[in-house]
View 1: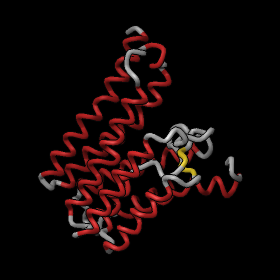
View 2 (view 1 turned 45 degrees about the vertical axis):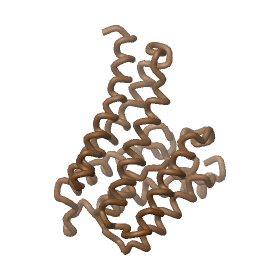
View 3 (view 1 turned 90 degrees about the vertical axis):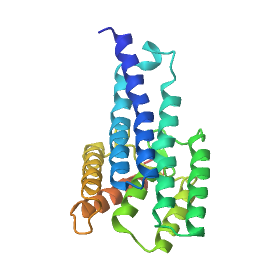
Length: 231
């Protein structure tokens, strides 16, 4: 296979995320939450591998007719923001006005963040919380905290989007990648497990989700504390 064909295949792989987003949305409309999250986990996995493949086959040079960055952002907004926000609203985890506040905050702030030219740092980490609402909402489904806790978490993370706090990219942030990448894969495994057992409260997947989520949310800030502002 020619390099140009391989590069094009990477774009096609990225675009498959739009299909998974639609399948997740259809499941969400029917309130089939486990199925919805399984499709989102598949999309999360695809998003994790298409970037390294794009760099390997240099899609900018070998398949320049498609803008891989723009394509990735479109699909990320669907799978990381739009579908999870709808699920949070429709599920009843945030009842009444709290649900409306949450979806307005999530969708509006995330749209601004995705258009922010400062969203990536020099070490390829994210500057500010990278709108990974698919991860946050899945954990909320698993733990079912008090709605005040959920609403407060949404508000805090939305605010942190625009603060100079780092969040590691599992494949691109070199520092601690030997630990970060396996933990990101573990999160994917635990997320799929939790969805498969319909978020059963006694499932060990819940603990795995909590531990891996805390690391992925806090690793970047920890690096800043240890290595300084440029860490």
